[in-house]
Length: 271
Image (cartoon, rainbow, N blue to C red; front, side, top):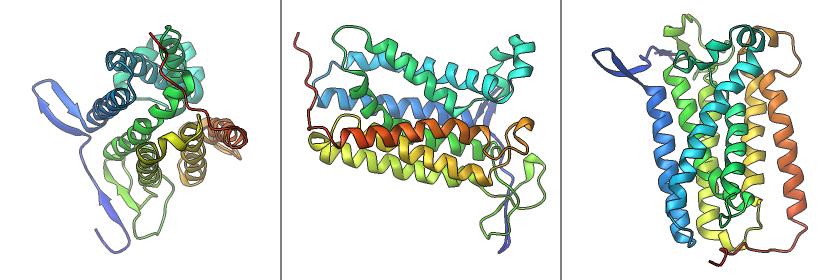
């Protein structure tokens, strides 16, 4: 390390036991689900929702996020290759997950989960889920850091990283931190609002705040991030930005709409 660069040469493998290797990225994914489950279980208990529903919700969210993230990568970033080699879609261990696809997968999974009578509404669930999702987004970007992937253009800034294991010899923007740190702060802010102001918040407030902050950060960081696919070269806005814009705009619209509606809190359905 010098005053003008940070040499980053960390192994993506946490430890190995014979042929089995545990990677930092996988650990962070698992930690996201574990902590997310713990948070949602406590929220359900606090608000009188049967905790058993959290177990089923975890399965829906896990499947939705992983399947969605994988399909998002395949179809948003390398459609031609995967449509011609569909069996490669299933080789998730080779890498290739897209956060926008994961978001879509979670929304679909949550819709399917919520259809069962007696469950809380779609918006009620999302207002709570965005809290652990923000923390999960931070962990995933830290996993990208450990993998020395998804970083930015060359920089002379003192916090630039030389990603040695990725074959880099000059410092690059550590965009994993540029995204990860705001996501962590968003988690803290959403958690504080839930704990301290929950009864005074309009439905969809936490959801729309999450969408605005999360995807504003994603949109801006993409300007210094290397393209993830060759087809993005020369694009005014890359794929990450094009996918972020609709969610960001939707978040702003929802925020404006709910601020003009009376405060109505959802009650637990009577048995």
